[in-house]
Length: 462
Image 1 (cartoon, rainbow, N blue to C red):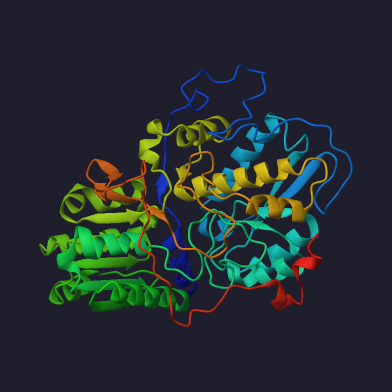
Image 2 (cartoon, rainbow, N blue to C red):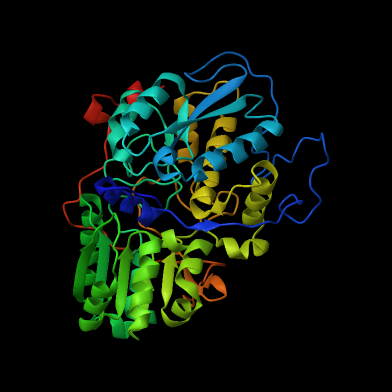
């Protein structure tokens, strides 16, 4: 994550939702260990346990904006011009090239356009998407709330890889593969496990440190509320300048002086690595640190180094996404890595990229079910019928017929000198622990935008 000046503070929000960068050089198979498709042959249209995701057809007509008899124009929101992180454009490239090689959506070729929000230009990019695109698919923007009313005004569906701001999270015409709804705290399962089961001795000495921005302060308040509801006592909270800290020793000393045993870190993993180095240098070891899934990847491991990784207990909640380092054990995750190796060999496979791929799969399956008469309404209603969506096996099942529900399944990763590995969180459904503890928020955190807010209703949706 790159940031300059005070504007960097808003990027801390992205840090809470995005994962670090994972790379896998494997390739040459179809995702299930079989030889790769022969040159010139159409690739398999199957993905994981999903059959015929893409395929040929002979469509006619132009039933909706962005749809012709030959193409489907879709928009991909990304802050890539500011963050320089191309994970959502990469996922769009890999999926659409694979799908188009297999025949497209009922014969229509997918044409993705990256709508580069450059962090602060979300509204402008959504307006452009409203002009040209059929739907938004597989993207995300840190300030996504800035464009939600424009999207609803033009009645555009959003198949987001992840959502961030309260105005957009769970808004109308949105189908997100991100677990959890706006009324619930998403990481409740992991935090409840940490303070009541895995490390109960830490419950009376909990701390939270976050980058200083208005958006992050709201997220901090949500964590305080949730931990208190689980019987935790917050003995330390602090904010650090999101543009960077030159000396982390004072923060580490404050954490040690307060006797913090369980720490939630909200920010970029580079800063976390420096804080943990300072803690380790003063010989202070916490019971656990919630590194947030921004740290999940090799970059944090490299920055932290083996001494810190062997001393501090870093955890990351993947919220039901299958871990990348275990891809060989999961055909769908392996298939994503293989497709990246074929269509974007220099790109990094990250957790957000996997989420984006799941969003693209949902879009493709829903669109294909509409056949020749592909409309926004048919697309959206088809996606809402998915009651156990897994992205072909990329994630724990989600009931997409419900807009606002707690996270049911979670999985926790632990950073070690030998890499990221599943923590001992007692999974009970394959890689996941399901039936997770839920917590419904009560604080004044705002609400999702609705069609009514822009003078529209579902009767206007065609």
